[in-house]
Length: 537
Image (cartoon, rainbow, N blue to C red; front, side, top):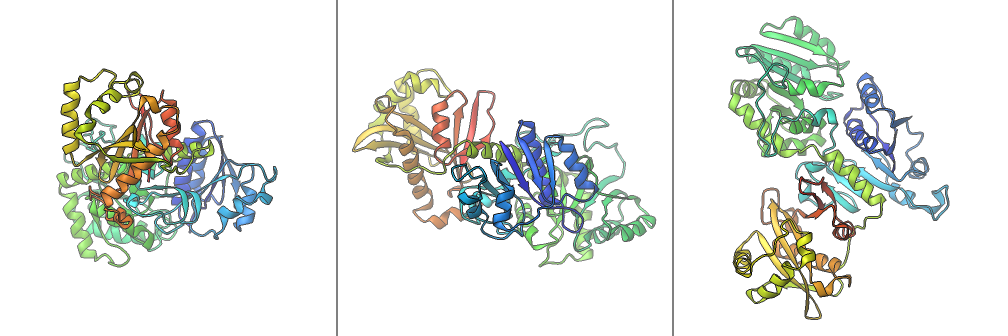
């Protein structure tokens, strides 16, 4: 796959768009893909970060023009164009699809367009619209899309970040036990605090945060990342620091290591907070610009950060010092923050995005219709039929359990399944004739995993896609009461619908084709038993 990234970053612009684009470049080049970046990559921090990706990434320099037709010409010859930019004009998808702009002729394939949005910021019509904002899976796409990928599972992070994750699979931070472990410090030593307000710090928040830390009166070893505007006032504060140490530093590529060894990170609610979540680190957060507010509020709802203020609620210096004192003097509170943060971001975002691009470029389809298939809720009268289908050799071969199920066990399972609120068992029919089953199991808030069995005498007749599509329609109506707006009822409502999931064994090529042809894209790599997971929003 040939992948073109379009983003800009540097002093005066900010670094977040380029940082997460470089996370995709790192993942894609590691898989052997050819990647180029079109845009401004300025300043020593981003220059070093881009160089760390390796020779598989080509830096093409600033974009000569971002008019849709011109950018479409720049993308000619690439399989996919991924845009992470707020300010490009509308019309890019249409320009990419215009045959006259393809140098290899009108029959040559148009590049797949993927666009990164933060809510409505940067949203534009595309083949894939990606919104990594926390809880975005509960919302409709912010722009027209064939595929919508929403929520914190799509936070794209560099491997230098994800390799420092100090959490078990349930999100509980591990305890650093020896010198050299991230987060280790000797008993009685000063607490380590890192202050990083993003690549720009547009409101000059870093000096105010340092003043609040000084006002706590605690013995602290503080490292604060400065830019050209804040370096002088921060250096003056370092000279006058009286409790512990205050070190002023420039942005450095190994900033994740500094984050991992801090007892608390005080940061703006930009891309750095998702790095901290992936590393399961405690944080106190300021929203310094409007586009950071949704993420800021999501962190507070999840109990993953101490809130220090937002543009609509300017931080009071005394209140900020009080909040910092409380968290710095309470180790249990910091551990709780880290646990909650670790549950928000699993570090697989770059893997998901590159895997999704691979599948879309390879021919995945965005939707499928039920056709002639209808579904109904299963009843006890279906017991024997379902038992025979479950014990069919081909069905058992592709199931997690390969052993035949005794009838008595099946009857007990069916009775329990029909009584459960977190499971829906359906029978698919064509013209009144049973052709298979669809089972939905609720895996998380609003996320339902599907299992499909096609009746042995209906295999090879193309009913699996219709069975899946009809099952999705049934589930959507069941959990939302037929009201499409109920999808966005909100995070934590276990009765809502945020995503469909599917677990498929890597050896089951037919099922893989089914889900990739029905709007599902990769969500998790294969587990120890060979089952990979797919998702559809």
